[in-house]
Amino acid sequence: MSAATTPLREIAKVIRSKNAGPFEITLDIVFKTKEDFEAVRQSGVITKELVSQLYNVPTQNIITFGFFDLINAVKITLPRARAQGGVGETDMHAAQQHVPLQEIRVPWPVVS
Image 1 (tube, rainbow, N blue to C red):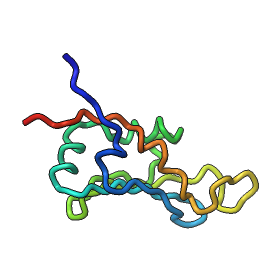
Image 2 (image 1 turned 120 degrees about the vertical axis):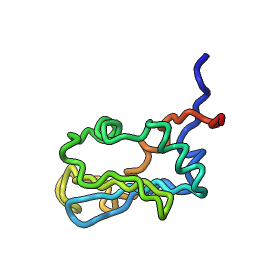
Image 3 (image 1 turned 60 degrees about the horizontal axis):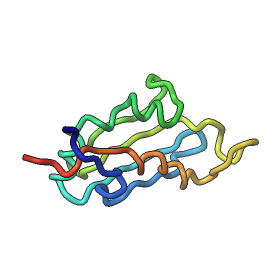
Image 4 (image 1 turned 180 degrees about the horizontal axis):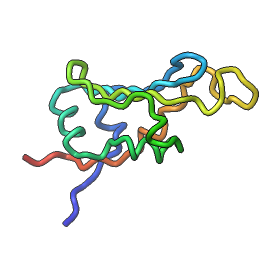
C-alpha cells in the first residue's frame, strides 16, 4: 500500500520566487511549523536533482540549495536562463518561477 501524497503548496506556508540580481533567481519554500519542515525534509522528496529536472538546470549549476533550520525554509538559487530584461527574457522580476515547486508531491500526512 503506497502512502498518500499532497502537493507541496498545501503544506508550505510560502512558496515564492524572486529576482536575485540580473543573472540569478531565488526560490523559497517556507513552512509554518518546525514539524512540517522536518517532515518534508525527512521525506527526501525535495532534492537538488529534482530541482535540476524541474528547472532544466544541471545540478552543478545550482548556486544554492539548502534546508535552513532557523527559518524552517528551503532556499534555492539558480542561474537565469537569460539576463534580467534581456532579449527573450519573460519574467523580469522572477515572480512566476516558483510554480513548478507547488506541485511537488510529498508523502502526507506523516504517520509517526
